[in-house]
Length: 131
Ligand code: TYD
Image 1 (spheres, rainbow, N blue to C red):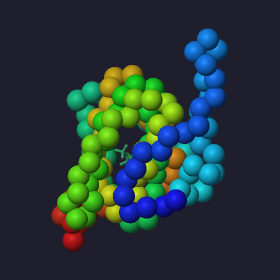
Image 2 (cartoon, protein in one colour; image 1 turned 90 degrees about the vertical axis):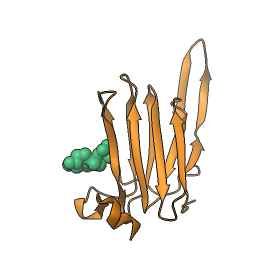
Image 3 (cartoon, protein in one colour; image 1 turned 180 degrees about the vertical axis):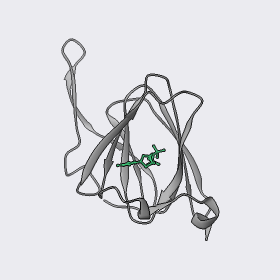
Image 4 (tube, protein in one colour; image 1 turned 45 degrees about the vertical axis):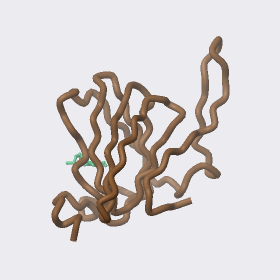
């Protein structure tokens, strides 16, 4: 279900240690119908990504490999830190939520997005976000 708050999603997982696992992002566990999926990788450890919010886009971030530290901030000043380090865990990021992300050298971040890419949907100025 969509929310104004970021929250962790625990995806169903099938498998066992001797054969490996499958994680499933099924419609029952997703807060929106995905329009697009993309992934980022090889982000240097000294780079902080994000620094933006979205007017309408909702996203789910998954560390399908490695570790991602995500700091979220809502317009009311509420800040949270999430450590993503399991391929069966996602982080829902609502619209109007400022975020920064730091990556381990081996991190691969999958992003499940509610809409097409649209640069006009970004708020990249922190003061504009707070208005
Ligand atoms: P951005 O969403 O700002 O990345 P992050 O939140 O990981 O820091 O996107 C980085 C750059 O890539 C930015 O210049 C916009 C561009 N971009 C596209 O051209 N198409 C896309 O689908 C996405 C997600 C980004």
